[in-house]
Amino acid sequence: RIVYVNGSYVPESEAKISVFDRGFLFADGVYEVTAVLSGKLVDFAGHMKRLRRSLSELALPSPGSDEMILAIHRELLSRNGIEEGLVYMQISRGAADRDFAFPPENTEPSLVLFTQAKTLRETPASKTGITVATVPDQRWRRCDIKTVQLLYPSMAKMDAKSRGADDAWMVDGDGFVTEGTSNNAYIVKQDGTVVTRHLSNDILHGITRATVVGLAEQEGRAMEIRPFSVAEAREADEAFVTSASSFVMPVVSIDGTKIGSGSPGPFARRLRERYIAHAEETAL
Ligand code: PLP
Image (cartoon, rainbow, N blue to C red):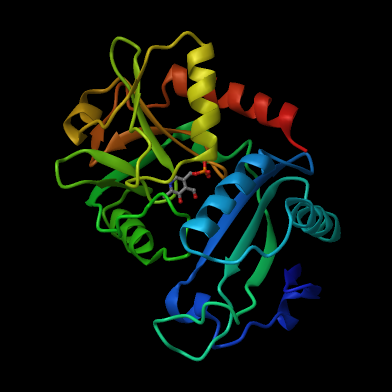
């Protein structure tokens, strides 16, 4: 695999980053993951917009223009022959002598990109749905920034897996679901209303979420943009999650309780089809 590191395209075995990189020592960095369908990037503009916001919230320097970053994405897709999969991009504050305070000016940000060939459309999980287990949300309070500080979600997913579930749904101190470890969470009530948490510092502002909320509205669905509790999710007709890598993924049980029929719901399945069609049409 050819990866991109600070200006060079190199085989992954030759890619190097300093041990003093603040991304490595302090998780001082941000990232984006963009889906690739038919060799094209899904919602690249949305990912760039969120990246700019993450950079500015952490006073991280920009690694370059949107055009330059798009060109690197495309070059990597072509060098690695990727038709379907993901592009991962990370920007960290770069190398500096280890100190909590970072030098205000003299670090060069590190820019790293790599591709992952991956089936996204026809996955087994999209047919069966996934199961989730709840865990307390113990992340820091700026979950709106897409930082590489992913230890808690990683531990949460391992915890869910040890309890036989595919992923974790994180729950705030009041018993309301915030989001999945790497996706936004939704339920469909018995009257067909779709419920998903409002945007705040408690969740990542999903690029897929923005598109999916629009598509659900186009479908004529009533939407309630508010937190839902674990109890409400147990009683729901359907549930699903969204992310760049899973699109729309049905959720069929929570903490061992079946949601609705216990198989992927009709609305989640239709929304998945609609989302993929929209992503294909608008990819660049
Ligand atoms: N929430 C979290 C915590 C995530 O890590 C992600 C994506 O990785 C999402 C939500 C979904 O965001 P997007 O649709 O932009 O991939």
